[in-house]
Image 1 (cartoon, one colour):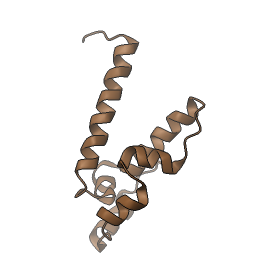
Image 2: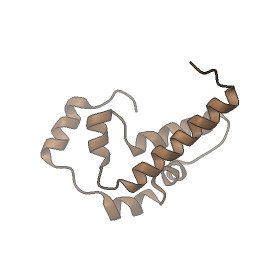
Image 3: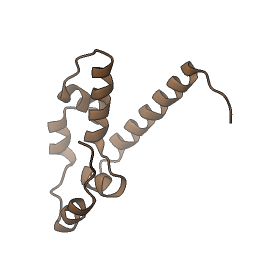
Amino acid sequence: MTELSRQQQTEFEAAAFRRLVQHLRERTDVHNIDLMNLAGFCRNCLSNWYRDAATEAGVDLSKDASREIVYGMPYDDWKNLHQKEADSAQKAAFDVNKPAHG
């Protein structure tokens, strides 16, 4: 395995995060409940993890600000443009697969 410097690791992780966020912004057809049911996390989880990292670094970042970083727009705007009501099958799958993290 190639040895990476701490700086390289941080830069590559940041690049991978930016690519994931861009991918999720482009895939508005993939809903959060689908992500939760398949992968155990969604855009909101990602924004919460981002906010947690900011808090650990001593930076006060609001929930709305962290969501806007992930969604690329205010969360309410994204919901109005892209979010559809989950169907009964999606809701049932979520009840079974609900992740333990908050």
